[in-house]
Image 1 (cartoon, one colour):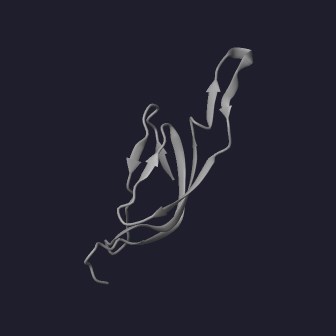
Image 2: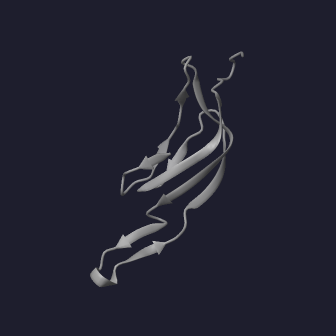
Image 3: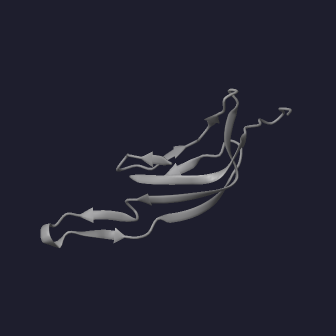
Length: 95
């Protein structure tokens, strides 16, 4: 889960996970990103007439992660990313 608390701007992020051996890991292959943010839901406080506008379900997208892949987190959003994590291999590196 990744949260963008910035109410005005989207942000590009690259996620790297370090394992217990110190190796850098990242998403590899298909990644599902489910986003719930201000594009899906905003509460309009208007006293007795308060309501959500928009009032949409979370948005789910599928992307293909590759080496050095980054995600764009929409403004004011909570994002759940699901996919396979693999060791980052740089060009020219051997196993």
